[in-house]
Length: 168
Image 1: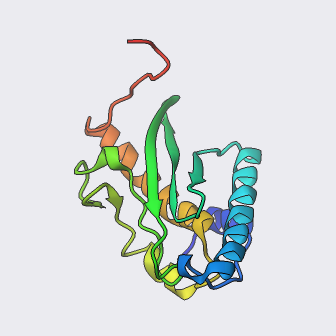
Image 2 (image 1 turned 60 degrees about the vertical axis):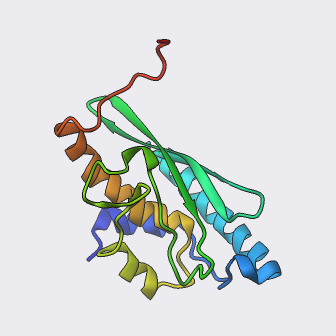
């Protein structure tokens, strides 16, 4: 089910141990430490492999996450805002990752720009609670979604390159 490249990418992301969500006070602090360690390791590994494709930060409580993700095609960088909230039932329930500016532009998206992860990612997440975390959601959820959807949206002209470095 998982190809070799994905397996290699996953091997660089530490598995989490603490089964705790935002309501679990002290345990949630421990879970957040594990989340940040996994994210840092994943980003470091991506940079070493010249595969840097997102930045994330969270609110103080670690319940709201936001940042940027990007996809490069034909040497052009297509950049998108990314955001998600940690569900109350986390880590049993995976976060719903959203790219708000793409809302309504593809059938593989729900209202509010939440990407569709139902068929492929959520069953995998369910089998790996509490070991999977935010870094795994990025690697196995958003990453593959971007790789499939963005080239299609570019080809259809739905997503167009916007050079954000030029003043308008």
